[in-house]
Image (tube, rainbow, N blue to C red; front, side, top):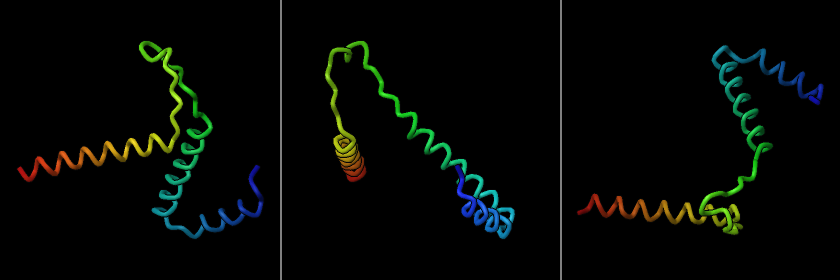
Length: 84
């Protein structure tokens, strides 16, 4: 349910924006809708094939650290390749 005061404020601001600002606002609102739809639809995938019987309990923090490490290693390889 949309708060009436918020809706009124948004309508007032919308009236003051130029057409390019209105388009930008529309794009941002589309982004927000998709963002929250994705958060709601976080389905847990069931592993199959070779991974079927493998317990996989990985936290978001562990995934973030792994991505950082892989990125660091790739950047080092790239930097080393340029200086050769």
